[in-house]
Image 1 (tube, rainbow, N blue to C red):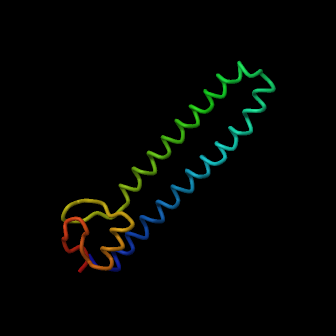
Image 2: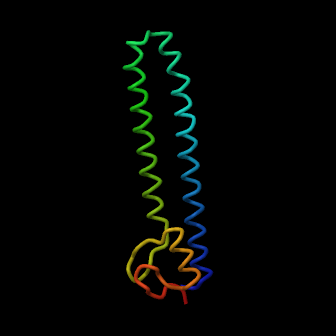
Image 3: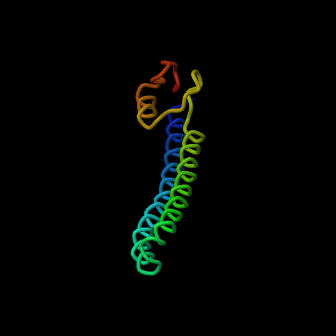
Length: 114
């Protein structure tokens, strides 16, 4: 593989990862802040004892959505990262930088870039 092709694959992988991480942040941050705003309102409306069940349910739904989205991010990261043709391991950000610099896989030592 040529160096320019490998660098292009790494950059595309990082762009996809950045987009997915932004989506995760767009859900996680407002969801967490929304829960903080929801607690006082539920306490005032339903009383302390009754609101706890609702708060717990909302929190569990929020966590379930976050876990599903986080799993999606991890799977897409693994799917889009370039892999060593010799050992088949995906390159992390650091190992991709090392492969660009040295031309070799940091795990098995095989020549990745011509």
